[in-house]
Image (cartoon, rainbow, N blue to C red; front, side, top):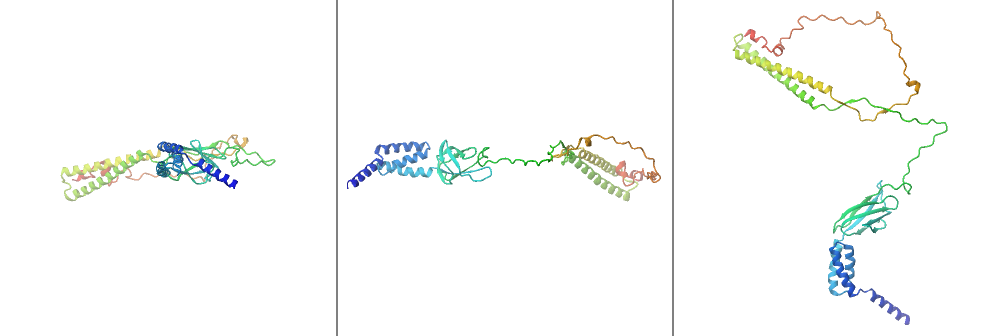
Length: 340
């Protein structure tokens, strides 16, 4: 009986000590409002839990209960993850927020944080730590934050070591060092200069004027020969001459422009190939020494040697212009002025 009474007394005393006093409830009530205004929602939630206990005054409980629900709704949360340089998941990472421990290891669970600009520091068990500055927004839930860790430090477990070259066999020759590289021959630039395009266009236009004006002049000349030759009006003959002159000018401009375009294309700047040069293989000293070349004595021509072809005599009348080209080259009316 005595032991039972002592146990009941101790439990009653512990319950009385655990129940917050009215002064503690009032202090938590006031502190929760200030913390909530400052955006320190984690501390405000703890204070609201304290002032919403049934042992606190009814007025405080009536306010702290709804405020606690609003803070829980506004409190953001994050889901942390970390990967190494190869994209593998890392779990042995400790995370601090603004210098305070948030997670000892990564387990994929959502963790509450205060809103605002926060500095997340990811400290792996091996390797260098990584920091990220993230703006956490109020009411944002399950925000994913992933850090990419660098390679582990040299000598740390899991660090990659460079592969050593295999030892040479006894008597094996030592590999030669690469010699100077021979640059590749320059290649022509693939692009065509803009002036070449412009000159080519002018040349084509000149040839088009030559063809059109020549066709019109020949057609008009044929009409005059069929109707009024040799007593045609001077104005008609003058019109044919003008068309002949226009055809001559178009031909000259076209030939000169096309020649200029060809010259610009052939003399355009060259560019070296971007490919890597091919290294020369090492040669012994004796092979690289210059050797004199024996002078070749001229050999007399034999009976079987091919003889150069004899020049052909010029054809009679080769230097004379053809009648069909005379109107456009000479600029005359192809005999119209002598027959009209």
